[in-house]
Length: 505
Image (cartoon, rainbow, N blue to C red; front, side, top):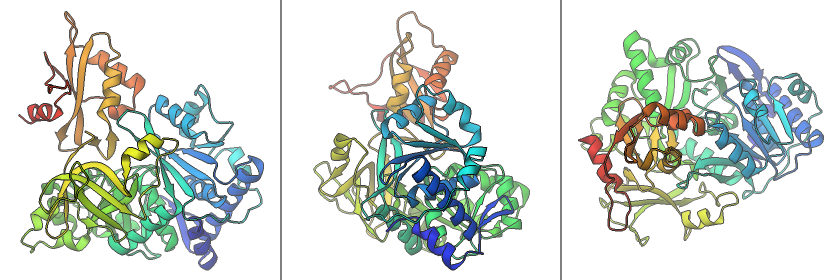
């Protein structure tokens, strides 16, 4: 079944129901959204020659057109490629070269970036342009049927080599994710409002499907992103807001409500994930907001669907292990199995730390055009997450560390090696090792331990410029620490655990 059938079904049964808002203004009913989607699908299929299984990329900031573009791609059986608009242009070029999209849909604010690419896709369509308006006048086409294992989306996530990997998310994967939301995260009804405050290319955008299925409302903030004051006002004036937020976003929203005395009752559900949430932060959030939070743990390889810490469990303050549960990421979603295993893949008993592995319908079939990475990540039917943790006797998972040394800053993934490779381009840098430093606002920030060549002087401004020329801004180090030597084991591998201990000391 094609994932876009959720929109088609809802529009057929409840066409006059409100569908998409920009700020407080209603822009589209479900009938209008479906009509525009089918028309755009027709343009992609009949004018631009997009066939089932071909890729169409979306490089856009949050906007009304994002939803119709996403569903139009699926409508004709093509594969959507949502690209993080915060990425550096070199990362954008790599992704486009890897997935080879027939068409690139771009928001107006990013059109100049695309125009400056060395090699862009054959067809570029700017959302909201005159050409886009003509595309919406094209005769609509019928929904193309898809098999459960057909790829619906490519989600590009950084790899340990620094090269992004395209996670193949099938129609079945994303439908299972949708079912798990209803079973384990939250009930949804037509009066609910899904607010896209976080990038729609990531987790926030994935939650559009369950809200589309249930005929709920979709709201793109007028700012296009996360603004605590704007969200508080929308909660007061619109109400029943649901959103996905990184822990740093939750912290900022809580601080705003506390500072202004705003009424948080207009928030229905805040799903948080994408990084570590400190116990004291969620405890304070619960005191201020009440039982409005749900935690999820997932990866692009198992989208939004590994474990969940429910609203009831977060609010169960009388439980003797409540504080321990606040520090956990909850229990497995309904359609997955989760284990903690040793280096040989054997399941470990409760309390012992090992790698977290997961299997079930939401788990990806593999990486796009990367069989080697697929083989190393999918073993005997289990997805090896690269995260370490422990399960307790009640089945709650607590993450301990990330075996791949992933840094999560403000909900964004940063792999140290890609930063290290850039810093090593500087002629004064002999060696470098990058780790995550704890940070109250962002969860973690990037810290670089630098060994300089003889006679060189640490020039942080020059290293910053180098990073900004080659990486997205959020990936550059926030701290540089000059050291004489990097700690290494007998095999020459840098001991990053020791570097983290130095930061904590």
